Image (cartoon, rainbow, N blue to C red):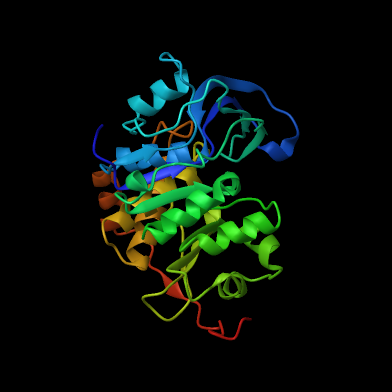
Length: 316
């Protein structure tokens, strides 16, 4: 068996049928400019981003056992290790149909009636050799594995976008690094401002809470520093925002495994995500480490600003 990579992940893996149209989605209709099929999925794309950045990553969710499985072949081609993934003849990817407007915004229609999560008896011997585990909302199907990984000392990075009730609450509690879209964070907490959401989601066991807000930047709080922070967005030419959040998670995990602090992880991930939206599809424009470093060093790179109005430690 190959060495266990430092970053493991299980969750959604998808085949996306993408249609690009000549109008924004708000127009209601538009002419088709291009159609394509691509591989995607939250965790699969995050792991592909890790590999593209030069890190080591392994998908450990369910995969089909056919040697010519297209999803398996794509992961391998993307540099993601698959040797540790459990196999099942009924495993199949999520299927998605994505419409991308002229402004880069998108609408995703998906069929997730698939085997998600991982084997309940996934071995501790493999988990214990890694340092980071990336999971998404579907990890509610394998909560015991997530809990074992946390107990073995892995940093649990949660890409949570929707709630299934108490099971999702438990999953979020297991995540030392909780990265949520701002919209879902508002729904989950019932709070209105990013500062209030960050405080509401904070736990003593957390290392970081990060809220992504697309073209408005990123809000975050880390255990190494006191304060709530906003990182404005990089200004890039948006072609397709598909997979940007997944790239953010992968880049964040890569920086985390490298020992970078919260501010550095967020800055690195935000730059990688910005570069990812300059090409079409969720994987085409995944950046290299040198590309991210170059963007961070540019004169136009944004700096984080403290949210001074937030009342820390008050639960507001």
